[in-house]
Length: 317
Image 1 (tube, rainbow, N blue to C red):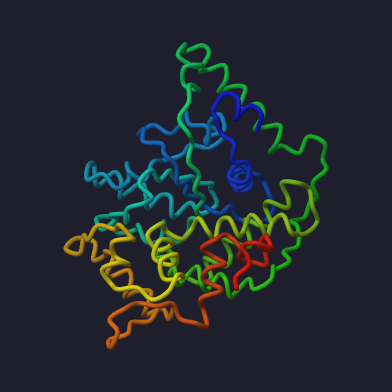
Image 2: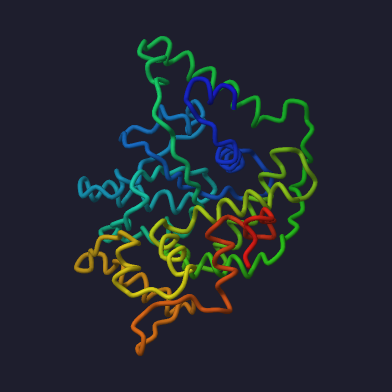
């Protein structure tokens, strides 16, 4: 973290731990695929801090969504899905817009397999420290060395068997809310397995015998970041009280691409209604949260799922 902060401007330790948990070699536990939502707009992702000195080779989702070369992209996507044991990291720079994957036949399986974490880097002069090719290669090699020190069990302090998974409070309930809120996770077993595997791998990263409170915080972060921003905005608006349809859709700021993707602000609200999270009142012409689910929805959206305690001043009344 000291190296990432000084040379790359990365201060989000929790996001770094999540990515390292997906990379660490944990016996008999499959690695969850990760989607990092961050402001990285370059097509080449190999030199990003998130590659940890090319410990893995990230791929930009913008490149996958490109129209050409379609056959190569389609073939590569199928190859990824067939090699399920490999670690995968995808970079999503346009996380505030609904992803237009309508041209790819395997996109749904890629999205439902991948856990999400969102972090945004602030602007700074960090790139000026690596204008020289030699200096850029040197700090990349140094980051790779630090990453190996973290991932490799040189002192043999990690157990030979994977840590035991202790489900946190309301684990299945909050995961069901994640599935209903997010448009990505259609397969229930894939979702549950991915969250549990991530918790186990994080515990293994620190050499623990079972998952505990630290893993619960990691899961709460991933659950929060797995909900797209336009859904979070709609929930925050409706948490203040019932709102007219045009008000909620304007707050969501989601462009209507109904002719191509069949998704937009209105269709996303209809999806939430079908999932039993919000209600439409024909008499009053407004949307509102379902009372029975409102507290749980806010816990997921605000990062307090799986039993994470709210600060006293932030408790739900």
